[in-house]
Amino acid sequence: MGMRRLTVALLLALVPSAVYALHAAGPLGLQRAGAQTSAQQVCMQERDLTKMTNDYSSSPEAGNYKRLSDRLKDADLERRLEEEEIMKREQAAQLAREARARKIALLQNIPDETKAGTVDEYMYKEGVQDILAKLDYDLVGLKPVKARVREIASLLVVDKMRLKLGLETSVPSLHMGFTGAPGTGKTTVALRMGQILQRMGYCRSGHVVVATRDDLVGQYVGHTAPKTKEMVKKAMGGILLVDEAYYLYNAANDRDYGQESIEILLNVMENNKEDLIVVLAGYQDKMDRFYSFIPGMASRIGNHIEFPNYEVDELTEIGKVMCRELEYKLGPGGEEGLQKYLAARINMPFFANARTVRNCIDLARMSSAVRVFNEKMSPGSDGMVSEEELMTIMPVDFESAAALENV
Image 1 (cartoon, one colour):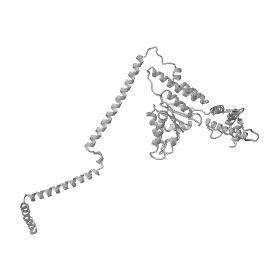
Image 2: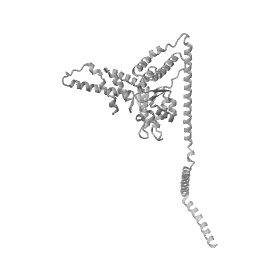
Image 3: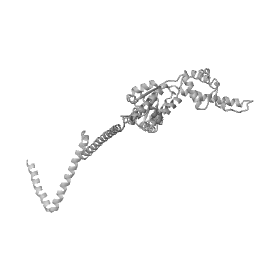
Image 4: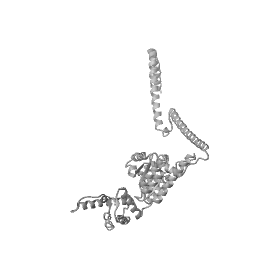
């Protein structure tokens, strides 16, 4: 008890001394003491603020809060985007109303006796008839294919006639699917379709760009999109023919890069159908399976054309056409020799219709050249070669059926 009293007495004695010292130091001493106290308070406030900030940053709800200025900027950006979308829709609606009004005015101003014209006039005027005639001249057989091409051409011609009278018109879906074996004329028909569409004003240039999986799909991440977009860019204004399109999709590998190329093509087919026509080609069964995996692709194909295999007589006629284009002719018995060759070749592996015929003609030309060379270099020959000999392919120039069977 006595010890506690002594301690209290000492404290009471020290307090007046400290107060006296402050007074003795004058106003400057008081000011310094206050400054030190303020500095200590600021440091404590900074420590408390830092602790609060750290606690807030580590809080799981920290991402739900933003600065007010940031939220105002985001809201302003969203408002501007929404206003732009509304403006675009209003402008599109206004353009549609104006186009409709122009058509109505055109219909009202057309005299009753005005006629759209005849189909033949439009066919000859646009040059479509010439292209169809060339298609008949270049391609042997393929009657279903030619009929389908004429149907599409008829639709385009009638659409032009309706446009002249101011009737409602719309660009039909011109994306196509070609199915058939190799060498059945799919590329040739695509070229002719490009010319028809260009003459009718549905394509700017009508050119055809042929692409395969190697042209569209990359080998690593980020490589597929640039390759596909580059091929699409080349084909803009014409036709993009994707040969063996089913190789773009690999059902066994969900991470295959071909899926990215398919998605780009689907987007282009939907949004750029007025400036690009996509033609998918391949075998019938494989294309059907491809469409089953990619339903969105099948729904965008408006015209499916099947290319049947050629018969032996048709293949022989194709060979004659190729000889004519190369300024050759078949000598006596040459047509029979060609037909015999093709009849044997058609049942062998790797038969490719018109491509096999072209290979046959090329081999016959080589055999003819060797035959003429040997004859003119033989003893007793004067070495003179006539024009007839240079242009004629003889039966001996075709490989025999027996030799083909032994290959």
